[in-house]
Image (cartoon, rainbow, N blue to C red):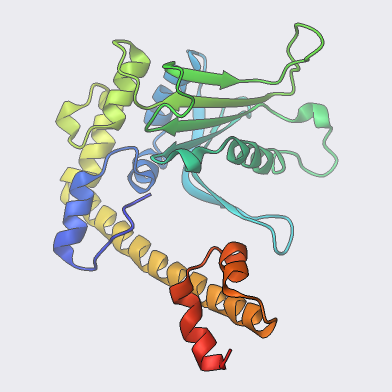
Length: 273
């Protein structure tokens, strides 16, 4: 994500855009949105396949939960190829953002939208959940970690069509993956190996129209973060008040709500608790 500490002035926004690379999901989503050429390149390199023909790419696609209070998910990139396979590509700077169970969740959200009423389960196409992480979160020094289901009792693959791939963004090998990860870390288009990526980075960081759109995206993100923070703080205050009404002690409240004593004391004082 873009840095949390965003100040709403043009200079700071410009500096943030200058510092961005393709590990920033906002920039990455804009570069790849509708960019069939760049998306195809990325997937062919990561999956080591030359037969992938991408036909659609959407950035920042939100998938709604089927239940009223369920969690929605916003995908950095959702792509589809010519035989109906779906690809979700996510970039993450922080390891916690690429949790293994998030991969499971994203995969399930993709799968649940592939079949229409009346279709057989055998018609479900393959799905690929691809995480590109800035660091080697599994710490084995590999460029790519591929996860597929298998039978534990026999040496055979359980071919359900679900695939999860983690790409080590710190990998610096002199091969296609190493060059791709080098490009993801670049702030300037002139330093990039692959022209398919350089073109998009140049547009959104160095050309007037694209850079303006990127700056506006940063500003909108900042406004959204402020609104979310205010909402979270209000929710926490409501929970603290409820805990105080229930006569819970400070240690219990801190443990249950992951709050601080400084957040509790003013409310306790106002309530006379």
